[in-house]
Structure formats: structure tokens, C-alpha cells
Length: 206
Ligand SMILES: [Zn+2]
Image (cartoon, rainbow, N blue to C red; front, top):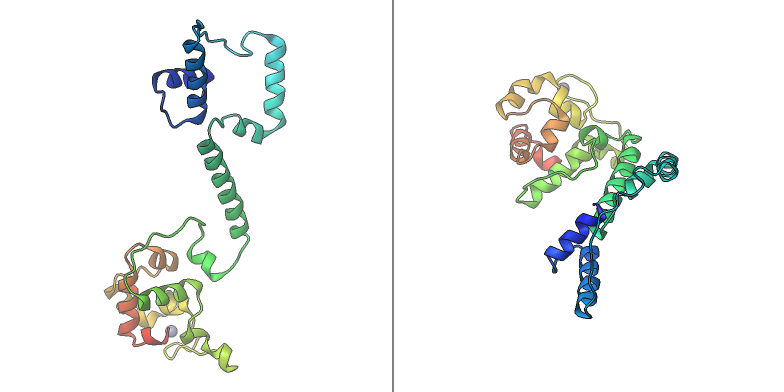
């Protein structure tokens, strides 16, 4: 924000949340109280002064971050910038990840869900991670991975919710789109997923 506008806000709204505006107002008021006369003028910084303009240009081109930080006026601005930078870095790290969960939820932004009961919460979490007792219990039992009884391929969450053609009609009946990311991240859709698994009599094995 421009310094003059900060000052105007400070002058007009003495209890403003902006700490800089509040600080300017306090100093302004102190000077007025001791009978100082203040004249507020706007000086367009650097404009029309060739040396200053060149310095400004060089400073901006030296660092992209510097341009971003030059917009910081308040603590709130700094928090917003840091949050955005952390999220950007986190997203880059997450995009290097090739886990099943990344396929289902490629963004680091939180999912918005309304899940009322613990059973549904547990089922949905396991499905999103891609590891369930039904499909990965063999790891604990040190046995061979289970195969789909209908098409004889290795049983996975993706196979059950998306690939197995034997369940196509049942998926449609419960409104599943056959798209893991869409079906497992859609708000308030967990009931449909659990009902689908119940219809296959496997929800209790997840
Ligand atoms: Zn199958």
C-alpha cells in the first residue's frame, strides 16, 4: 500500500487494525497535541529522477522475491506471503511424490468433508491411501497378493472402485464416476462409496 494512503487511513480511522497506520496516527496525534502544525504532501518517489529510477529498476530485476516483499506493509501481508511460499514449496515436493495418494489428491490444499461417523472416516482414509486390509492384508500374512475373483488380476483399491468391469453397473447405481480422484475427494460423497462397498460385502474388510 502507498505510504500516503496508509497515512490517510491512520488519520481517518485512528483505531484501525493496521499497526503501521495506528503508529503513524499516534505520532501524528502527539505532534498535534503539542501544537505542531503538520502538512501532508505526497512525493512521488523516484518518478522523474533518472538516477533513482535506474536504481529502482536494478533492484527489482536483481530479485523477484524483493519485488514480492516490497508489497509487505503489515504482519498480515507477511503471513499471507509466507503461507503462499510454504504452500508453493510443499506442492513442489508433493508433485515429486508418486504415491497412490498423490494420484487421488494431487493438491496440498485440504479436502473439505463432512463425515459423521468413525467407520466411514476410517474407510475413506484407507481408500485414499490405497492400502486396505482387503487389498494389502497379505503383506502382514506374508502371502501372495489377492486376485479379483472376476477377472483374476491383482486386487487394488483402483481395481475395485474404477477398473473392474464386473462392478460397472453397481458403480453407476451408487453414482460413482469411475474416477478415483473425483470419487474419493468429492465432498459428502463418502456415503455413496461406503454403500457401494457394502453392496459388495467388503466394507467391513477395508
Ligand atoms: Zn475384477
